[in-house]
Image 1 (cartoon, rainbow, N blue to C red):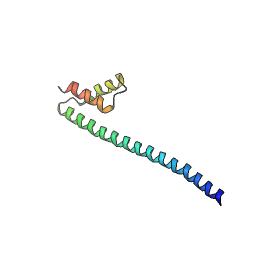
Image 2 (cartoon, helix red, strand yellow):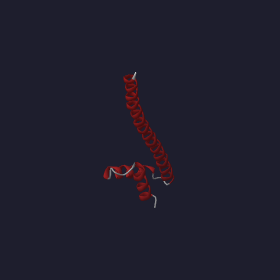
Image 3 (tube, rainbow, N blue to C red):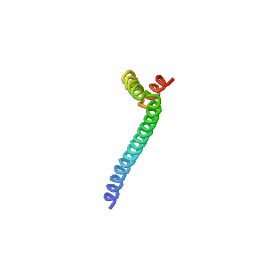
Image 4 (cartoon, helix red, strand yellow):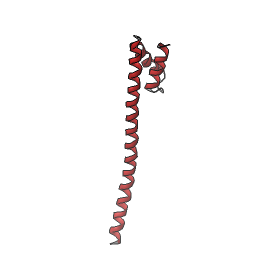
Length: 88
């Protein structure tokens, strides 16, 4: 009986730990996806505003160039920089 209980506890410890790790990884992944979606929405708002000035294409091209020059920039940062460069 004791051996059976120890096996059950060992199994539970192993699986509970694994489930906790999986839970936090999934939570982080969902948060990342939500942040990316928010970034995409903000980028689209910047591009709509740039389009009002007839500069959507220029802002997009500039942002892509910023990302190539500095891969550490987030997409949103690159688009904000590009927007600020073109819409003065």
